Image (cartoon, rainbow, N blue to C red; front, top):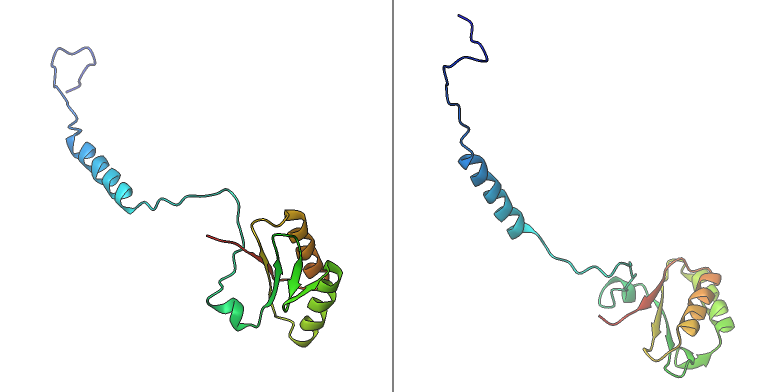
Length: 132
C-alpha cells in the first residue's frame, strides 16, 4: 500500500528534544567548569626564572639604574664595554645567558641599547627581568 502526501491519515510524528537539550546543558556546564580563564596581555615577554635555571648557569647580570647608568659587577660601564664583557664571558662558557635588570625609572632606550650590545657581543639568550 502506497501513502500519498495528500493523505488524510495524519500520523503525528513529534521529535522529543528534551534529551538533546539535557545533553547540551550538561556539555555547557562541563565546559564552564573546566575552562581556565587566563588574562592575556597580547604580547609575549621572555621573563627569566630567577629562582631556578637562570642563576644556576652563572648568568651575566647587567643593571640599568633609574638615572640610566649601566652597572656590571658593581661598576659603571658603557654599552660599548658591555659588548666586550659579554664576548669575553661567552668565549669561556658559550651557554651563559644575559639578564638585564632595568629599573622602572630607566629610559627604555638605554635598556634597549644594553640589549643590543649583549646581542652584538654574541649572546643568543638575552632576557629583560620584569616585576610581576
